[in-house]
Image (cartoon, rainbow, N blue to C red; front, side, top):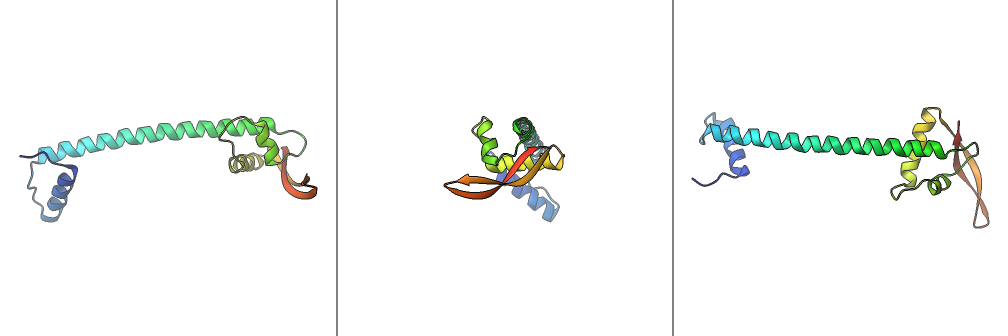
Length: 128
């Protein structure tokens, strides 16, 4: 007998579901299913670990943003310049600032900024 592939096992399971009769050894199918379930559990555990690491990073960035805020309004670009890290983007900062505002730890208002000889209005953030 040749070694059964995953495809062959799945086809055997489909045939058994359709006809009600297993045409392969049920012990082999059970062993295959248990092995695949074990692999899924292992993969899911790794995914949970990676998600926990990302959540910890998120918390660190939120803490760093809160520490950088002062009594004066600052733009996202100003805040980003004060935080070290390659993965600090304006989008990530905006999301953390939104959380801080919702928690009552920060305030937001439009501020006038000089750029290229022109005055533009940007959102500024400060400690609440």
